[in-house]
Structure formats: structure tokens, C-alpha cells
Image 1 (cartoon, rainbow, N blue to C red):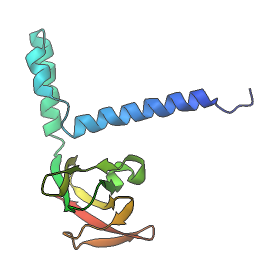
Image 2: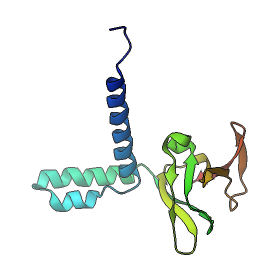
Image 3: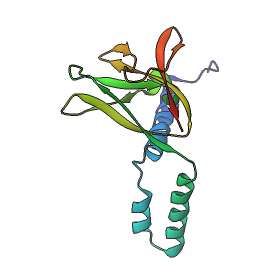
Image 4: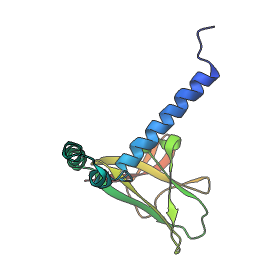
Length: 145
């Protein structure tokens, strides 16, 4: 071998990283239901452990933050943000019948830069007047308290 990892090795580790990111996002976005774990626990010690996990997540001071934009004519809207590693993990927003795209994201307190990608084009949030320049593009700043 020439010291470089093989294509299959790189592919395997990339896949493993993606799976890990999906699992972490599910936990932080609240899709993982610790209450279900509590109901299905087989013993008192398992139930106590799950309850401790629930409590520790509440102690992280995470906040549910809704990102939304009203674009009835758009087909696809993504949230592109520093907390999701920009283009690497953009978040697809769900479209309502009235044309509002939105998604709930769980974040710790802080300032976050973001923009929307609307049908492949960068789009600043018109409802947020807090702007900045990042990498030559206009981004919004969302403050989570």
C-alpha cells in the first residue's frame, strides 16, 4: 500500500460519521423519546437510568427555535446555518398548505448565523433585520436566549 486509505475505507468512515450525526441530531431535535424508554424499561434500575437521561437533557438549557419563511411559490427551502456546518448539513424546511416553510431546531443559548436556500438560491430571512456578512454572502443572526 502507498500509505493512503482505500476508497472503501474512506467511504466506510464517511458513512459512519453521517450515521453518528443523524443520531445526534435526532437526540437534540427531540425525535428520540426518552419517555418511551421509561415506559418500556424492564427493571427499576433501567427506569431510573432513563429518568436521569431525561433530566440531564433538560439541564442543558436547550431551546426550541422555529425557523420559518413565507414563500408560497417556492418548491424547496433549506436552512443553512453555522450550527449545522453550513452546506454540509443543511436542514430541509417543511411546507404548510399556506406556503410557509418552517422547522423546529433545538439549540443552546447563543448567536447563530444562517440563511435560507430557496430553490437553489441564497435568500436572507426577510423577517429578521439582524444581518451580517459571512464569506461574501449576507446572513442573518438569530439570538437564542
